[in-house]
Image: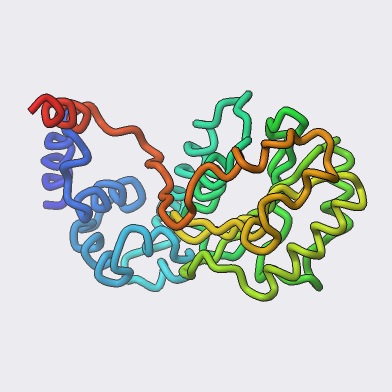
Length: 270
């Protein structure tokens, strides 16, 4: 019975626009590849009832997933692969020579880097004089505080990579893009450490969902390093903050499909 149902599903999906499938149908078909002989339709409904949405489902731990009857190790691993692949897809959209010379570009990059990650993580992006990315490194996992942030490792890494400036970003899973007292202390501590080495801490972004907050702008003001850093043009800071973070939303990762484009064009014509 299940095999006949699966065959009907495959026939329906051939040449189908996946965007028009119901959420449970997408999940049902995905689970075909981990569960060869079982009713994945019922299981898909059960998962959505348990977690509430695809997002909560993909952000759940493997242990939480396997607590659902019918989900074994293979199914849990398959589900955990989805956000990991999505993050990699988003990263590969980056142009190799792209300049990260605005806060909107940085926010877009980091929002996508945190897709599906329900752990608080701290990243450091290293930039050269042209504002091209040299590297982006995960520094730590867990709450961000002065006692646990490896300042020596971060400064040594920036020096070894010959970075002119760095950008920090950490996420608040299931929280708000509002810096805590610890976030402010860490920012001051690292700002002083990098300044002593002649390296600019451009910004420290707090990321929550598709929102961000620039700590340096809010905490230190815009014109904080013009007199100290000669490789930054005098008008850089004015151009750097190119968006109002209160209104900003991360652009979509996946481009609109052909049907959506055609519908948009017809609406504009009307």
